[in-house]
Amino acid sequence: MSGQVENPPPSTTREQARILSITSSAEPIYLDLLKQLEAEQRKYGDALPPAATEIQIAELQQAAQREFALDLPQGYLAFLRLSNGLEWDGVCIFSSSKTTYAGHPERTFFDLVEHNIYFRDPLDMRDYLLLGSDDMDVYVYHLPTGMFEVRDRVPFDNLYASFKTFDELAVHALKRSLKLHE
Image 1: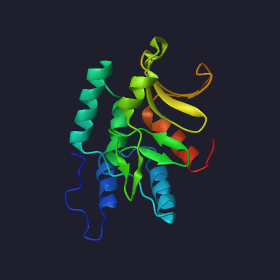
Image 2: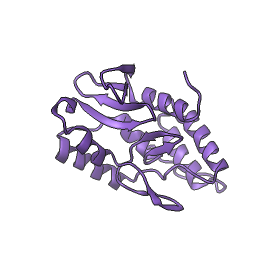
Image 3: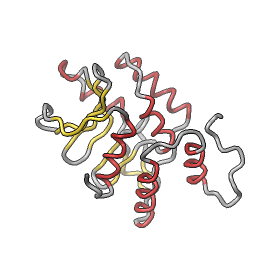
Image 4: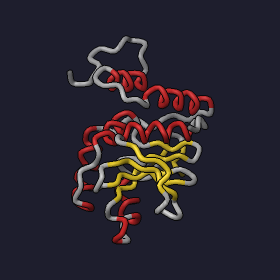
């Protein structure tokens, strides 16, 4: 199955069709939290960013190869296929490219490659890929171990949580943004 909804019901919105297209193949464990966040954002006139297109994902992968000589985690790319980044209440998961918020041209979404160029500049940070952050912590992929980690911004050596998959990290981040602390 391609993961695409061939004929969504006529009353289905674009956002619902996007979520249905993901859930029809393999439902990510964070999907219900993402739906809760989307409902919360609607209360304030905001919305999740649109899904990244396959072209945007291909361009992101090429940029990551060019800049860092690495392949991006598939779980992160699957998240971008639902929402091209995320920023809500201090929690951020980087988008595929620098984009502006719908209805807020003065605000821009954080871009994975650009942020990692600066983040990974000190040589001791080359073992990490920065995926996002919140007010206190950074969300990183530790390349040597393949673990997704939540670390203090300062000092970075403090490891707060470690996960085997990006989906687990996304659950952590979404719970933070929804104030559902673990």
